[in-house]
Image (tube, rainbow, N blue to C red):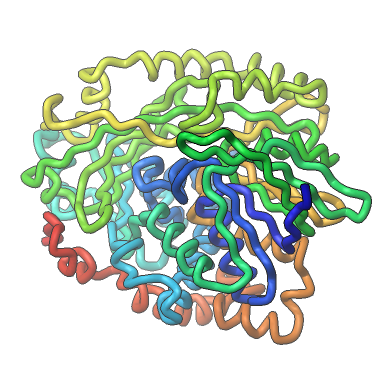
Length: 511
């Protein structure tokens, strides 16, 4: 069987691969790119709308991105990193909207103010300190803070309904926070790629094997499944392979055999949401409101009550409720975790397992909760919530990274990580949150490692048209930030209720 030759093979058709394919085609339209997806549609796993929170992660409201340091001060390093990474995404999306690559922004991104809400003296003190620290920097200069129940009621009416009048509370707000339909975004990017010469999308194709040939290219064996037909085997020869297959990326990284992938393991976590579609309730909330994770809960389980706008319809979502699973994908197999165990990752896996028995018990306990107990958790944020108004929805799978520490044992990571082979011919992305929000930064890292020639001369000029702040520091340059942020907010209609009003099927009210 003769293998088809391409410059780039993208494994997975979600946020990461669609972003990388778009960037590469913008930088060099002559590249031949094939995207393979095991399912029969694009962006159906973690990228699909209700498989993730849809938060445009900018560290405005996520309290776990600003922990307290040992000296009692707020650690802003992660918040700054995530905020500036999301600004890169906003810049690229703005460029693609202006160029007609992406549709009207209302179809994939909408304003949903980002708020934090806490109660109790200690938590209020923490939020006040966090606000004062972040507000002092130009990245977060537009953040508002209040301990006034009437002001907070204007920001988040549902959260104040039925709440004790003498309860000590506080909230912050950034009015131009966003709700992103990453599924719609990714499908729009892939649809545009399909219109370009030199791009091919192969659905219902699963990677069975990856072998690096003596000339450093990769021969990838695909198993194609068609309804009512016997599966067929196809082969592709690629100069470069990127694996952006969500939780399945770990398994494919192991199949590649690259040295840089040894020692990695995965800790799969399932998720669930409570969802409300009743207009009389939905219309009273217009924000993404994040709180503090309960004691003993992992950072991935920070509770939040969210406005979601999907295909013009406004709904409410609360969660996530974490659960224990051994699957690496929502459509995966229970053998995914055991089959990922290798001699080179056994010690890190065992070390993390022994250190995190409380986490495992917590996840198992979460998965066994009754509907009433889940709504009890919701009532901490929406005191008047009724069991019958909320339905349970299964979210996407997350596979947290386990990697070797300095002692050769293991540590559990809660971010994302790009892995690139020494010869720069293979790359994979592992991890979860903030995930899709920082896809542009992650994929720029892939390009910088494996396609540095595309960022020279005219390529650099093209990149600066797409991302004006590329290779410049938004943390250090308030003038540049002002220029870029004014443009992205204007082009993407953020901070505006225009998008919601334009959707004829919307039941939303932003008053």
